[in-house]
Each structure stands twice: as structure tokens, then as C-alpha cells.
Amino acid sequence: MKAQVVRNLCLLAGLTAGGTMATDGVAASTCPDDKIVTSDGCVSRHEASDKVTAIVREAMPRLKLKAVLAGFSVDGSPAVLLAEGVSMTGVPAAPDMKFRNGAIAIAYMGTILLQLRDEGVIGLDDPLSRWFAKYPNADKVTLRMLINGTSGYADYVTDDGFIRDFYADPFRQWRPDELVEIGLKQPAVCEPGACWSYAHTNFVILGAVLEKATGQPLRELIRARIIEPLSLTGTHSTQTAAIAEPVLHAFDAERGRYEESTFWNPSWTLADGAIMTTTIGDVVRSAEAIGGGELLTPKSHAEQIAPLIAGFKPWSETSYYGLGVFLINGWILQNPSFAGCAATMGYLPEGRMSLAVSVTMDAGASMEGNLSTDVFKKIASYLAPDAPL
Image (cartoon, rainbow, N blue to C red):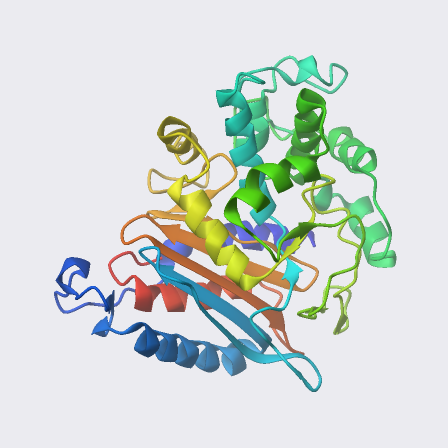
């Protein structure tokens, strides 16, 4: 698990290694209203759907994927959704199948944090000591540092003891205070504000802060401020490992054998209330809304995607982490991957392109990084050839 987390981050940081595809001079503005620009020139939505399907079908045997769900929307058009492969033996994958959305909820949390700041409830530079005075460096760590990964707190997910306990019993129910304790017992990665280091510890703490600051459960904040305004009818917070039908089953080989992991307990992954399930259509809509700043003021959205940590390793002026989202060459992204669940969502402001991919692994699939991002890059190079990843 420790290596997997590191590889996922390296994959995002290195997205620019992907190839580019020429458009032969075709620009989006030259396409008729009923066409979209692609690496093949101006095509209909139906033709684009067929090509994306072909890209997915080519990727599946190459990457050893059991199922792929994908969806895209251009310039606010209705999303094109597709599914290939099987959820489990004899059950074809379908676009309405539900899966865990993992770190996509971090983008929701970042949005809620900015909303509450605009409402005067909290400030991004409020110290953590306002709510958790006994935490290490609580007087120096701010809410901004929690959401953008500069708190210096260690990640409990990379702790050897946590990994051992999780693999011994993947159905265990973890409490938020247990997770925070594991993270805070480790040596700090750096002084607050001195480096960037991805840590689930940050997000569990931030979830508790949002609840204390508002007096509301995080799941209610997400429901009222994200799910309902965006009409995400297939997205729900969950308190158990259960997933509502129809389910996209997950499979994993982290424990040294290929096995079903659909109902491994996800309580360790994020703050209580931010552990969620979703559909590919809702992820496309989320990418559009988060990336387009629909739920924020223009000023707050600009702050959400500003290159404030571009000077920290491994980032640059064009590839960096914002307030709960990754920014890579103009794309606004999140790419959850855990326990056989892998997805990538992205939004490209130029052309208002929203793209989402969710995959499950077949026997023999690589555990290196996030395989949904490999498929995402191939589709993006076709649908957005002027903005290669």
C-alpha cells in the first residue's frame, strides 16, 4: 500500500510524459455546433463515442482490465457514458454501476472549505489550535495547509503497522481518531508550510474541523452543498462497506493473491462522511462543476486552482496541487486508487471538457500506479489533442 500511494503521486506528477497528437490545424472554433474537435478533426458525438469505445477496448487487454466505465462531456453537452467488460463473472459492466469515489470527495471538501470561508464561518489561515489545540504544531498548521498538503503531518497510510493491520483484516472498521493518532505519532515530514507531502491524515483532521466549525456532520455538509446542488443522484456518503446495487465489483492483488475487494471496509480512506460511492455520470458532472467553479465565487475558484505550491517538489508552474485538486497542464484532476478501486476525473476549461474513467483489474494487472489514469490519458489525447497530458 505504501508503494502504491507513492506510485500514484508520481504518475500524476509525471503525466506530462504522455505523447501528443496533432490536430492538423483544426481548432475548436472551426467546428460546427453539432461537432467537436478531436485528433481526427471535427466529428459528431456519436463518432467520438465510437472512437472512445475503441480506445477503451484496445486498453483493456493491454492493461489487463476487467471493466472500464468512461464518460465525457464537451461544452456543457449531455454526457456520453459507456461501459466495457464485466463487473463479475457473467455480469456485464454498465454505466449506472456504483463504485467508491475516494479522493474525489477531497475536491468536495476543498469546495466546502472555500464556501465556509466566503460565508465568514472560518478562515483558510485559521490555526488548527482553534479546534484541536493538543495536536502537534496546532498553532502553526492552518486549514489551508491541511487541504493543500503542506501541514507537514505524516501519512498514516504509509505506516508499516497500519499496513500490517489493514492487510490482516481489510474488513476492520477504523475510527477517525485511530487514524489521526497513527499519523501524528510519526515524525513530521517537515515544519508546517515548508514542504508538500500528501497525507490522508490531513483530510481526516479537516473533516473533523468542518464538523466542529459548522455543528453539522460532514456527510450532511456534502449532501447539502455538493450532492443536491449538482443533482448527483447516484452519489452517497456511506457509513459501512455496503454499496447500493448495481455494483461495479473491485478486485485486488495487494495482499499477494488476486481476490475480490469490493466490500473491504473503506473507513480508513478519508474523513467520516467523505467516504462515498458514485456513478460514472456523477463523476463527469462533478468534474464539470468543480473544474468550472460552479459552486464557488470566481475569486474562491481562482484560489482553489492557484499555483501556490508550484515551488515545492515534485511540482512546477504547470503541474501542482491546489486546494483539494491536482492541476496538470491546464487539467483540473483527481485520481482515487485504493483496494482495487481506481478512477480519474478531469476538467479542461478550454472547451469545457469533462472526462471520467473508472476501472477494475483482472488477474495479472499491474499494481503500479493508477491504471484508470493510463486510459484517461489515451482518451484525453483524442478528445483534447491541444492539451496533452
